[in-house]
Amino acid sequence: EEKSLGCLKMSSIITELRNGMMHLLQGARDKEGRQILVFFPRFFFPSQTTPDNVLKNLIYLLDIGMREIENVDKIGFTVIIDASKTSLANFHAKTQPMIADALSNRYPARIGSILLVHTPWFFKLIWTIVRPIMSEAVANKVKVLSNVDELQKYVDPSCLL
Image (cartoon, rainbow, N blue to C red):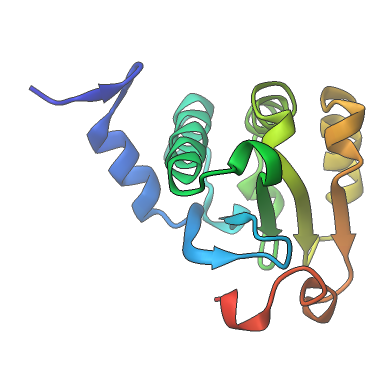
């Protein structure tokens, strides 16, 4: 019998991890010492997974990351969203608000920063949907970076893929 995380089976977690949409950068830290979680929205295809599976995978990764850092409750995570090669086909009306809600309401103190890089032309549209869902504290941690050079202000280049 397969073990599950809530209602998510381990096979679903493995499938979500293999699709490459999100992962922890093992051993890598930002310049503040935070664990780094990376999202690649270009690997999300609504026809291949459900918003619930994406959310549960996010929670699974954050829980693993919290076990790796003694003082994660004080320094938190840095979330990097690399939106390069992302199209409207990679968005689902329910998924992005669910992720924003999880980061804002389940892990607000553990999110040190959210760094977006390579945002597509339609980012402002998505932001108008997601921003009202986020707490003010978490929304203020979001930084939209114009290029990878700006990302290096927060993360040493040796930590990046």
